[in-house]
Length: 75
Image (cartoon, rainbow, N blue to C red):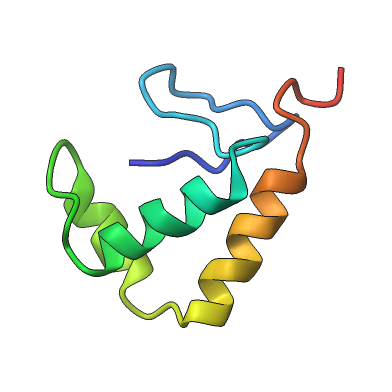
């Protein structure tokens, strides 16, 4: 499961990874893997549901956006 890091770009749940500052290509691959149900561990079913309706353009845009955010919350 991934975490949308609000506020200040930091995940509020320590066991969930932050998306901010992640490698763009990694994010594309990860989202596509959820969409295609190739990731099945943990709470993957939640992410599969989130990714199911995303187009390749949506995935690319989300990955570019999260990769552009500062991993340290801009501090």
